[in-house]
Length: 441
Image (cartoon, rainbow, N blue to C red):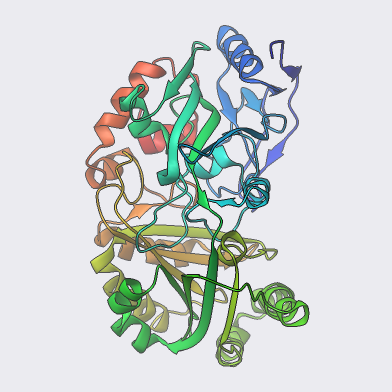
């Protein structure tokens, strides 16, 4: 398909999901093919405009903000090809993960691992390093087997382990700095079931048994409720079946009423009257009950997230996670902070992607959240000091204050990435203020 992308001469204001970032581009384009995408990029570069693509806006940072050309990939969607011999699927870059998951399930196929939400586009999720939790399976980007990249001069570059491998090594988590991804090829496998076992557990038990809980389960994560000693754990393991999803009533009660409806009310009250947060947290965390259910993988990995928040997440060497979390707990207990959101802890195996938060090391992730509209800087700053003391790497799409100097010290392959950027985008067509901070200029 060839042609000219649908382009408006003046862009409308863009805002991300959390409301933390707004930008007003000079121009917008909605290409329907890789050819139209390339033409839009060439035209913008000729006019001296910088170019960024936005997906669903689920990044909390300004990684997608631009005052130049804003590309909306709404028409770059759908599956191009399913190859059952190589067990791969090639998908257009703007395809939302929820549509990909549903389409794969209809074909009796599945991704190996997922994050806990699936609203993002495939390119947005992979480019920022979106991940779930896994003993053996890594981020969504780690499941990429090939991709198409439109570079600053409008060229289409195909990348894989065999074709342009030096680009493939970096572009799977490219931060939008190397070009615009037009299509991605993922490894897939036969559709499988997961049994989820959710169980309350004390903070001391989870942290004492952390290594054992990881090694014994394919996917382990937990949430700690600040101002309490209570955690909720989730163990997901493959199952031969049969499927036994949560009942309609119990599923609605747990996932909608408690996790979204009641949680919204609690957070609204906590924002208005912070002193109510610790006692509510103690009651709410004790109200959690154990449950076990079995369903197709993506329905177990993901959950609806309707309560809006801001988030910071750091990846640590896995053996530093418990120490760091205990330091966070001690910091909260001696501070005047009142934290209504649980802290989430997940893991991932080492991978070989240059700027992956798990690049070259088995990792654990500690994520902190605050309800939208609640002052968060003092809390995030205190947590960030603990994370950076342990060599933490911030999630590229979540709030942090790190710069290129710090990041070059914690990513051994940082120079490899920036050298590739200099080659593919010497004029910084894909640059913006966020990339200048984290990658340098």
